[in-house]
Each structure stands twice: as structure tokens, then as C-alpha cells.
Image 1: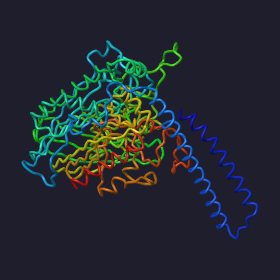
Image 2 (image 1 turned 180 degrees about the horizontal axis):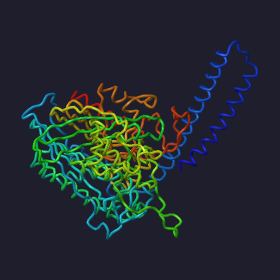
Image 3 (image 1 turned 60 degrees about the horizontal axis):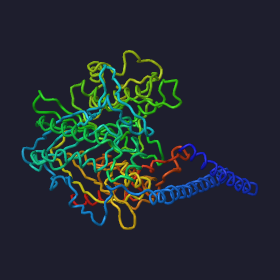
Image 4 (image 1 turned 90 degrees about the horizontal axis):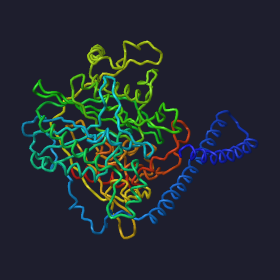
Length: 608
């Protein structure tokens, strides 16, 4: 779709350029210049004018594309295809009675209280369905109807797994425990997050849990957790003719997510211990890149390191940075010569599994909470190292290197060399150092200080109804292909329930907990934020806030409405070219950004 769209629009842009060139040439034949500077200035002005014409043309084409896909095609499909029985009337819905929402700590504190120590517990459990290996499951983020029943085997001969990792933490202030769960999945609708919370409601009451937050690592090679890759056609047909609603996401997988998340939290509660927390961050700009204009990304890798008072207890590393774990999804064709189109049917947790292997081998627990993922993906030059291997092997190497960077942030080079030896030289420094394109992970790595974090844990969340003004996503929700809880008003508009939140861990980490994949310019500002009705997040708050995306929902891309396009072009000011853009096909719509960020600002203003 992207190539054909780009080709079509490129032809139109070329016509525009030819016309502009004719005008410029005509003007040049009649112009006289008194100096070279005058000629250069006029030429630059003409080039800028030509660029502005192309930008305006692309915006017109994007508007036409949005109209055709959303207003015409999407509206027509929604009129023709009826809703499933799961859709409810908006006027009958009471948000206050919608269960399994946890608002967080009642009040925010600025100084440690009580015993003034951190308490943290860690746990993890598999979320693979019990019949995995016997029953085939759809692979998320490939084409629909690609089924498999096997996981990759890692370099140590261990089968990879899909996991729920959990931490339970408090600041000993007596205001309650806070839970974070990271599930190896593409994304989970808020309705499924509430099912996970329902599955541990008794734990919340028993252990005074005031906030349960479910994040997805956002792997693109796991079991379909959003419904669109399993059986969308069969789901729609069933829900047109049957009163028994069929959901797109396999219920056996949802059951395993619920049970696995509970087991991980139970293990974390049993592991609770006191200790100190340390914070550090390092720029990993060589390991991430924004693949679509406007180019705007947070290139930092953030780490919290919990060190128990009891030296017999295992310390825990909490990591966050924005990056799509999709390195392993680039090899589509298999080695089977008898199939015209065949796809890698093995499941994998991508680089997350291998980052954890390195971190575990150094004696730490590990949890990854997805950061400001936007359209950011891994930059694989520094981890490819010129070594042959398929895309899965690239994910292996990327995961190892991120693990080493996490562990070695505050080390000297000598300490990093010792760490490399201790953990088995996973990247093959001894074997490959000196080879062309090979980059030794610890050479040139900046050493950063780690700061002790005061035991202050503040969190507040808000739930709200958001309109799904992207008619394609509304169709997936209203037919129960996706697991969104969908509401419909009398005018035929569709809505769902989502959440945003604000988190503070000590004085160092301040977090906007976003339900979608937030474009970086909404955080950082810049040219990509022009035309947005609100200030960028860091400008509005006056804080060095970071984002954790895909927290408690899977709302898709969250874009500046001024740049919102379902299938079109965005101007890349760094390359001077136009990038194809179809990301907002997966989004709640134009209204998502002002709704999400507006609700976040209300939270922020209420506590700060």
C-alpha cells in the first residue's frame, strides 16, 4: 500500500515540480542580478517556494485520502455491516459503575514518609495457553491467518516463552501498593486490561493495591492479542448472524493472560523486600531511529535499579525506552521452496527475551516497560556487526547489546570487560573484534552516574470515554474483531473507554502513562507539533517527563491532528523528501491526541 501510494503521489508532485521549474526558468531568462549574493538569495527563495507548494499539495492529497478512506469507505462499511451484540448504548452507560478501575494514590507526597524505604517484589509467569503446541495460534502483526504452534529456541537450547513480568512496589508511606505488569504481546484493549484486574481483585483487597497497570512489550511476533490476525472474516460473519458473540482474540489466550498475570503478581507479592532504588539514563541514539516524518524521538534508555537490603535477595532492573520490538519480523519467507508465499510461523519475544538473558546472567531480575514508542524502531547497524544471520538473529544480538548497555551504564571500561566475561561474551567480542563493521559494545559507551531515588511513589489515573472517529477501527470494534468495549450513540458514532495516568518515582522519574503510541513531537515539540491545539507535554508541565506507551490500552497511534493521515505523505525536513505514512490507519482517530493529552493535563494540574 505504501509503495503504490507513494508512487501515485510522487507522479503528482513531479508534475508540480515541472510546472514550478518552467515558471522559474521563465523568470530567470528575464532577471538581472547585481551580485552573486542576490542570485543565491533569489534562488533559495524560489526553492523554498517550490517546497512550500509541494507541502501544501501533499496536505491536500492527505485530506483527500482521509476523506475517501474514513468518511466515504469507512462510513459505508459501518452502515452496511451491523454491530455485534456486545455493543452498548452510550446513553445507558455509567462510567462510574464500570468496574476494575484503580485510580492510584489518594494524595501526592513530596518527601518520604513512614519508614522511608522502598519495598519491591518481582515475579514472572508464562502466558502461553496450556494447549499451545497442540493447537495452532495466529501470529500477531503478520498477515491474517498465519498460524503456528512453536517458539524459537535460544542459543542455550532453551525454548523462548511469552511472559508476564510484574513488580509490586510501595514507598512505605502507607498509601498502598502499586503494580506494573508487562505482557509479551502486541497490545491489549482496556477491556482486557480490566479482565486481568478482575482476576486479581481479591489480591488488591488483601494487599491494599491501589493501582494495577498493564503494559505490553509490543512484540510483533507473538500470539494475536488484538483479534485482527486470527479470523476477522469469520468473526464478522458470526456476529452478524449469531446472538453468541465471537471475539477476535482467542479466549484461551485471554485466559492465559489473566492467569499468568495473576501468577506473576502473586510471586511478586511473595518476593516483597525493602531496599534502595537507583536511577540512571543514557543516550542510545545509535540504537533507535524514527522511521517516519516528522522525525521526533526520545533517544534515552532509562533504568531503575532496586537493590534489596538483604544481600541474599535478587536485585531488579526496570528498563524503559521507546522502540518497536520487531527486528525478528522482517524475514517473512521461509526456506520452503514449495510455497509461493510462506511466512515464519515460529513465535518469539524478539529482543526482550535476550535482553533479559544478559540481565539475568549478571544476577538481576528484569522487566521492560515500553517507552515513547511512536514510530521508533531499532537501528540495527551497531548490533548487526556485519555478521550473517536472519532477522531473528538480529533481534538476538540487539537484545544482548541493550542488556549490556543497561548493566554497564555506570561502569568503567574495565568493569564492562569483566561483565562481558562473566556473562559469556554473548556478542562474540573475542571472536569478531577487528572484523569489518564489528563494533565492540563497551567501546565509546558513555559512563553515567546513578542517583539514589528517594522513596516517593505517586500515581494517579483517570478513565474517560473517547470517540473512535477512525471508522476502520470503529468497524473492528463494533464487530468484536477487536476486544474494545464499544459504545454507540444515537447518531451512530462509536466510543470506547480508555485511561491515562501520571506517575512519579522519586524526584527523577516523572511519567505520562499513555494508552497509545504517542508521536514524539507531542512530547518534545518542534515542527511536528505545529498546529496542535495544546502545548507539547514537556513545555506544558515544565518537567522532563517521559512517556510509557501502551499502558492500560492499545489505542494505536496518537498523532497531531494537523499531521493526521490514514494513507499519504509527510515531509521529512531532515532528508528533504516525503515519507509515506499509513500509521494512523491504526488509531482511534484525529481526536485521540487532544483527548488523551487533555485528560493527562487535567491529572497533572490536579496534583501539581
